[in-house]
Image (cartoon, rainbow, N blue to C red; front, side, top):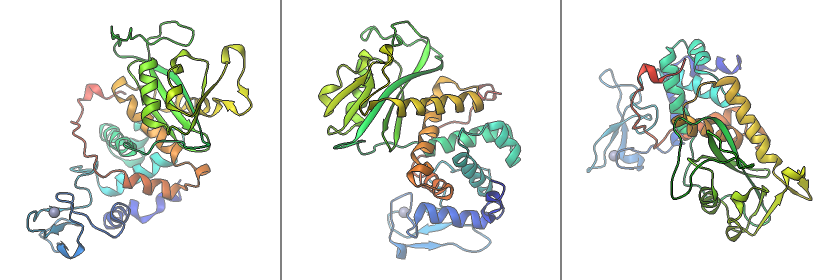
Length: 323
Ligand SMILES: [Zn+2]
């Protein structure tokens, strides 16, 4: 890590910008205002009068100016790009995450800035509108976990919406549902209530019909069978964890990584931010070394994710930021 941070992109603002432009644009600059990607209609503005890295879009209808950070989670930030990139590399390289306190100390920025910057990077880690997971001959493991305390109790009368555990006890915890493709990627969802309706919708929207689905004996999955090629389960209450190739061990090890990371690094996490922490752990899992993704490539993948996610997110009040 110390060697990694010797990279000049963490000291030199121009080099940081060049690195970011290479990741985001890959040689093809795009005007974020109108989508113009005709390089002949884009000119770089030089000289004292202009900010570094400023471009002019010459599309007659547009004529706007932009930099690589316009329309991204970095937009309108006063934090230098060198620090953004250091934060980006640190977050992608630490397996269990890194606390805002540590980020504040390592980068020499205020705790509040560190906290805010990290949430923006988590937003960049978020993926959406993806292709279905799995496919013919592929196995998807599904399971639910409960983490922390819910800020409010979600009770929907239509759905008799209380979060029950597998043993039927009421639990005031925040339910998470995760799908993991064996040998592949994960998608996690923070749901208001883990019930059949929610779980069935998640499977239907995210899993290719040709896949086999493996779960435990939970009643939550009774209705998924019409959405997959096969639904097989192991009976955990009967101490059955593996039967043939049927198991939920992969999704459970994902949950244990998530919980260890959350308890060790992020002791405080309010419910409204839980989906962002899930995005962070999902991102690292989906860009892990076992899938052939090295540290530098993981950071580049995150840099690509900053686009189109400009937060409509106001700066939080101090009292909202946990210490
Ligand atoms: Zn334009």
